[in-house]
Image 1: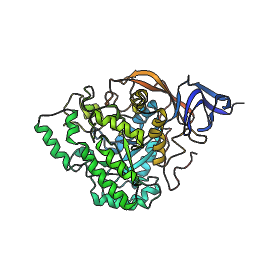
Image 2 (image 1 turned 120 degrees about the vertical axis):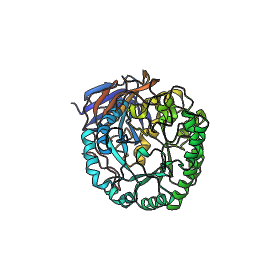
Image 3 (image 1 turned 180 degrees about the horizontal axis):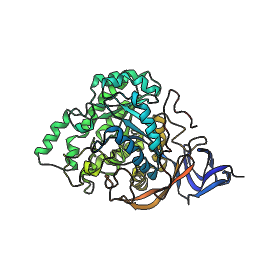
Image 4 (image 1 turned 120 degrees about the horizontal axis):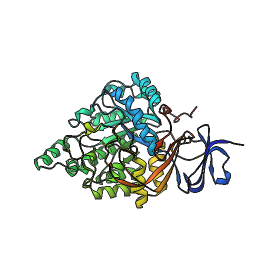
Amino acid sequence: MVESTIRVVNARVVTPSGTIPGGMAAADGKITAIGSEDSLPEAEQTIDAEGNYLIPGFICPHNHMGISRYENDYHTQYEHDMETETKACLAGGVTSFFTFLLQEEPYVPDMDFFVETGEQQSYIDFGFHAIVHQDHHIDEIDDLAEEGIRSFKLFFNMYKTSAPELGIGHSDAGRVYTVLKKTAEMENAVVMFHAENDDLGPVKVEEMQEAGRDDLSAWADASPGISQAMQIEQIGMLTEHTGATSYVVHNSMEETLDALSRYQDRGVNLYGETLPSFLANHCEDEDVGLWGKISPPIGYKEDQEALWKALRNGTFQNVGTDHCPYQLEFKGPRDGSVWDSPPGDQGLQTFLPLMLSEGVNKNRISMERMVEVCSTNNAKRFGIYPRKGALVEGADADAVIVDLTKSFTVDEDYLYGLDNRWCSAFGRELTGAPTHTIKGGELVVEHNDVLVEGGDGRYLPRYEDGVPLAE
């Protein structure tokens, strides 16, 4: 008697309690069994993992749909991106994500649009963070929580003058305090921070330009590690003062680690995230070029190795992508001027492969720790665990088979997305890749071929007791 719709056998299954030989069975979109092959029920479809790892789908906590205003307004671009970028996610083994809402107008009146358009377009399940950059955004925080949003982002002393094309208002210490105080009393609320100093930045940029420097290392030196660390110091103080929970996104340099770890050691709820763009690159990589321009910048080789160490020792608990889907014409050529390009990398489809190739296969991180920081911890931090983020009975059947020996080149034939002609890893040969993606108990990707259409993604609202169970 067939008891499941799909099962995976002959796998090394990464579970919260360790890696075990065997597989997984699923029915009605849920995991019904994890264990030895003999213990799994029969299924309509069986996939032989051929001894490879079976892991939970990656969850990206940090990306920006609709951010490019090159051709369209925000809402139109958001609609396009929720189709193109989530297809890239699925191909790369990312089965859920949280994207940032960003507009000057209030968010609540547009929530039906964001949710319904997302569900019509998306290949994956999704949630939202709201960027608080106007005073009226603070006023609607409670209403946003009623809509299932409990994470709010502030640009602390950043984007006062830089990158005006992004349309982001900066936050001073007063706004930071107000938001932290307000969310401290909200169950499962998280305040996210871009920690970079836009008072220091223009002075350093002028210094670099006067010296005739125009490359990725000049961009790194224009916003050095202290630019992030000095903001994290204030975030830590204000978080401790208010009793809130804070999450510093995209830490890129070694100086951030001292500030984060000191407050963590004192019991302050201050968490740190880094990106594959920083883990896989450094600013003196000759083949990265302008396509590695990010805010904050990619650091030096010693920064890169310090970030990997911070992932291993727990200073960083989370990894995201900060994926910004730009058309190449907007981003600019790889060998162009670093001063003329908007910041941002495209990294959703390469998230898992880069962590395998640069992390697991180079012994910088274990497979189990990779799953923790790229899936499980992201689900826990943003209120969707254990429905997502772990291979356990009752969870959504979102899983990926990964082959540590599979090599491929990041090129136009591999990449999906809004523009498959560029990313910081473009042209690089990687070893370690997803071979099969299962979402909701259905095989949806096989060897980079997406087998389904969009519109199957579901909104993941977060309430006081977490995300509701799937219907």
